[in-house]
Length: 497
Image (cartoon, rainbow, N blue to C red; front, top):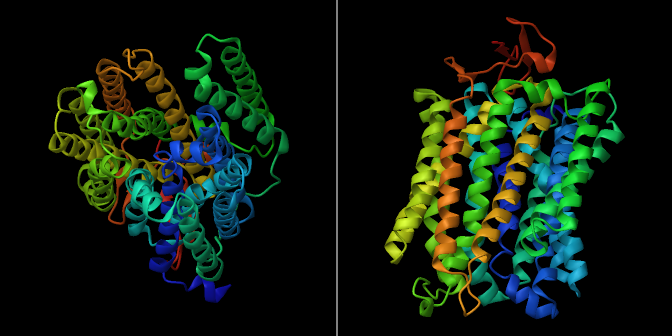
């Protein structure tokens, strides 16, 4: 293992970036080709959408659990485990003879969502301290970059090679990356002792599935339907039971004291709100652009062209992944989050008043992309600064999970708004889309206001210093130590109230 410990952190970073980028791409690449999948398997639209829903449910359940397992049994092991499931799920979907098998493959792929919290944990454990914020921010921005890029490349790949290559390419890439991770990524020295409790995991999975299933189906079933209301009620009951059980577990799955840390719950609130707007924007803007010109507002764009018009969003998010850390060192991560929320709100509001030509779509998408990118690039370092090293995986996993929950809520709300106003042709009206984009802009502004609640992170010569206190049981002024690559004595994180 000593040989593995000498792996240059730059190589570890490249492997982690490929893993997270692949997962992000697989979130969105199927969105533009759902009609193709529907026609190929000769199924109804409601059945084809389970290609997305199954993935969403699986990732939401397994991301925090795998993050917690990484903290307990080792991040290297769980990174390889997650990447193997990314590959296995992609292979299953690529070979699927029926829609049911493809949906099963997407469930397997969702298990691979554990790469995100594991990547953050490895970065905190292994990277030189002055590189942690920048690396974590860049990896976090890859979620927005990958999601947008997936929509951009889906059309050309599907048209040129066939829709199954949307799964073959990730299978090839993630298989190679899994081998590289197994060979080169070192095992983490920081562990959370104790067993993994089963009951909290079952309860958490139960309320997540009930909540997300109800939200995702609400536009079709109706928000007031017995099925949706019943699922939401079940989710609330299981959520309350889960919190109670976690409080009474000797070694909880998710430490509720950690979740109550101000640096954690404020970052989670921002993630929820930004996820609401980001996922809904990427989900419905292509539909807006592909609406026939005969409606008076649509562009009649092909899948490929609508993807290109969204490209500035992904490019801007990528730039933010590089620029966020230097800006955070100069201005503070909290300031960058607030500014990002404002920019994102301006970009989405721009869609309401500037949507008549391609250059306008490109411009407002770029502005929104900068906003989303700055927020997500700054949240990950803030989470890592707020918790002790042995909880970095589970804390990051819950933040990613809450972002997904926000996306599910935003997509369901946007769908309800858009479909509630249809023309005689059966297509949504312009007013429906513009009302929806206005709601998304408002949520980004609320995210900016929520960012003001984030505690200020003190900055040292080496990087941000946070408030990892109550989650580890340490008192004010204590030091949480975690050995890092390139350091002889480990990194000491001063605790603040």
